[in-house]
Length: 391
Image: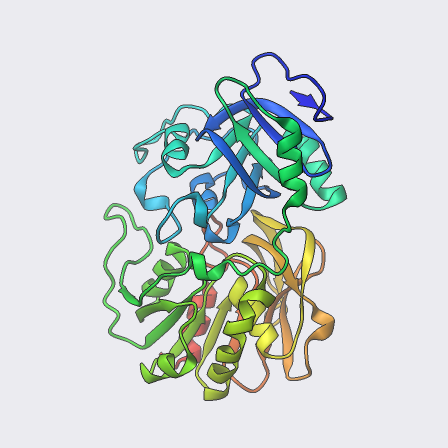
């Protein structure tokens, strides 16, 4: 169901719309929460793991379109939520599907996707041509838009378009503070294992401080499963407070927003951590801000990388891994200083996916190595971090 102008009449049975800032209107069937949500529209090419994707804090202030047409058949459950707390305010604001979400058929499910979206406040839209929307994003970049769901089909399309047009977007927007924990805490839950689920891990080895810019649970689980004691601290924690804990290593987590904006308060602290000589592992937003701290630049991408099927080459080993990605900014490789080497590169478009300092145990990757929602090719990076700490 598609209309191309805000003055076009609504199609009979329309209960959901997506209004783009250029005036394009996509009409379909509303799903999940009623109301409206404003954000940047991106597409994700993963074929599974929709609950992990929708709860990834890196999607904060974004509306997510799934290119895979059939979503919902595994339902939802409490264990597969990635964010540490909150609902759509600190993860994906909206979701777009080709078909109506199907009923669940999985023993781990405790709710349908539709009911779960209602509880979390995620506005959904189904029944549109997601291929056409994906093409719009690929050709014009990620658009600003408003997604709306009204069971009565009452929409002020001109007002929705105006709202989308007025939004300033993600550039210059610091979202990490909102996504971060407000106080420090310990973490000892490991990766899921049959049949016990998520085991408690004895972190009797080295200690690690994770700076939470919007960290995912499975990053913490993967780190815990590597055998380290974990303390998670807020995004605004000073380097002095972190070093006072005498950690053996520091992780700069994933998170949402513009790295340059978050970097205004985070980069000076990261520089101090680098100068301390502690091993540092950056992930996603953490990778970008580490690059800023080392003297590089970051830039906004046209449509970003979002999916669980991205090929990346590890230049240090020559191996290619399939990884999970979710980012709309990238490190400008041409701005990397001489002291920094590029370690990973995207085989889709050649963009930077990893860096390391040549003379210190400091490295980072653009993608999500904990494999959430998958695959598991990059779990070796947690071992690489352990080795850097001398575990």
